[in-house]
Image 1 (spheres, rainbow, N blue to C red):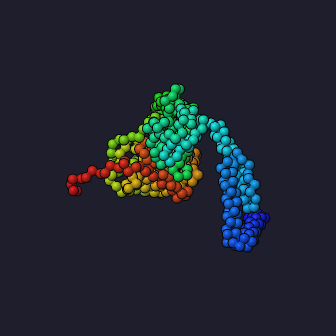
Image 2 (image 1 turned 120 degrees about the vertical axis):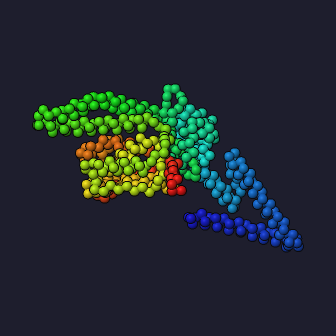
Length: 444
């Protein structure tokens, strides 16, 4: 703290002490003159106290009405108190004005945002929203402040999303307004139970995505028939004994490329069907152990395969789901591992259940995957090594199919890989997907 204010305060209190001593001296003198010392001191102190109380009353009256009155001139320490109060009041007014300016700038800047912003308290009540949020969600602005957001937006998927705990990804909501509008809502938790809801109009992106899916599905269907005809003619040519030997290698290469195109079109059709189904599937109990035994048998029947393909079944429990979709997902994972595992390598297929749910993993001793490529593996047509993928006949759609199948079954894909040592792809399913194995009466 600066020394000058402290010295000034000490001087003021010293002046007040001197004034009190002078008052006592006057009282003592009056008492000596009148012959009543104590009476003189008492009256003098009483007058001094009354004067101080009068100053206190004037100070209190000014504090209560300082916006209408000028500061009083009281003298002594009282003037120092008044000065401190005035200084504090000016500082408070300055900070208040500065805060109001910042708030006005914040309000103006959020009003200019192309996205809606809503601040929710711990109870889900609206504390603040900008103009765009009111426009996108058809809210009444300030009239809806203090009302629970789920009382204003009653769509079940939104209520379920807001009541959850996983806000890592936004949800897309279709509004009932005309024309059809799609909104992306992303809840961002902050503070103690508070959330900020970001609202964005994604109608254009949703329509473009729908058009893309329709185009891919239609193009795949249209290409399938002519490709079948081409493949048929190529097969006829390849088996024709009158074919010029010099044309045999080109025809064989054309057949290989035609088969690869047919596989890509088949995967595109599967992916289109999966994307068209948003709801989670219930399905029937699947004997995963038997399915994996067949997949292992298929790998062992390949002319080029890993030296060791082991099967590790740790549970007889079954999986509740769609048999065709689950087989497609597991087959894609097994096929990828078989393609990238060297001839002297090892593949391990494992199935187990625990308290967290059901799990299927495929581990290989292949070349591994760079860490920066792992997040993009489930994208369409993404390849870590495009040249090697073409050589092995991969379509680049297998892991995208796996991701969509798992999403329809409430599961997720986990990928662990170390370059030069191999990779492990694990499918995790929720516990509600576990169906206990039937009891064998012969072993009861």
